[in-house]
Length: 118
Image (cartoon, rainbow, N blue to C red):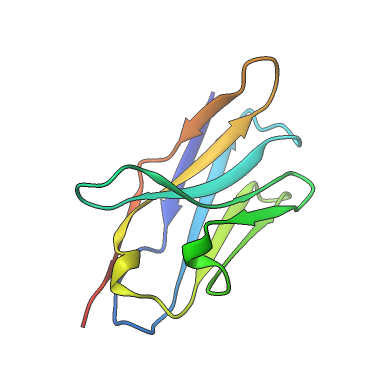
């Protein structure tokens, strides 16, 4: 089993920054991909950023140039540095671990609230 625990959410003013962390524990494979998704009230969950075990990244268009995803494989931790935050970034941010294979499997954290408001 895999457990994911997020931290770092909170209330920030527009233009501010936050850094989210997600610590994975349990049976972690070096080939696991990790990422961040978010869900705003009344909206579907959407991809924010993902990072492969090799360090390749992919971002939603809405966050490119503002958010940076990174991972520390030794600590089984993934980070999301969020700069120039906008009210539209307000959402619950969830950490994801994807295990590849014939049938990929996703593990999810509980989520951390990010609120951007003046």
